[in-house]
Amino acid sequence: MAARAQPPPNPENDRPRFDGGAPWLDLLASRELSHGPEPIERLSSPVRLSQWLEAERLATTGPPVDEADLAAALALREALRRVTHAVLNGAVPDVGAIEEIHEHAHHGETLALRVRPTLERVAPLDTREALGRLARAALEDLTGPLAGELRACAAEDCRMVFRDPTGRRRWCDPTRCGTRTRVRSYRDRQRAQM
Image (cartoon, rainbow, N blue to C red; front, side, top):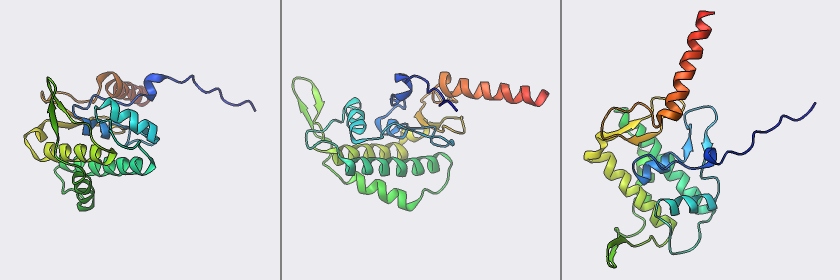
């Protein structure tokens, strides 16, 4: 039996998302379709995490990202996912997940700034400090005035969390999840009529 031909790689499908509205939300989006049967992992190696941090303007000045840093980033992401969805659902967040986020939040200094000639952030020293910045920003957003702007995608297999100041969005991306959901609903209606 002949092997099934694999579709050619699509660089668009292999690219992390940066449309959550905040770097910590983009971290959550680095595992796409996380509530579906086949999640897509975008931070699959230390190199991918390093590229992601650079894209988020969190590239470090210290040692390169290693496997331990990757494991820490994935642990933070999953803790943030559990707490964020609990907050959005009005449920009590998992204490263990909150402790995980707190542990990350204590890494590194407060945000250091410099003027040369414009105001800019000082790069994090290492990956743990970069993750600490993400954890602190997430805790601020989840407990502060911006918490009311957080929404979860209406697509059951996605549930990506994004910032929506208008309060009118249903999907993280209407051309992705919105279209997928409408096509799925159309097919279900067609099958029901048969």
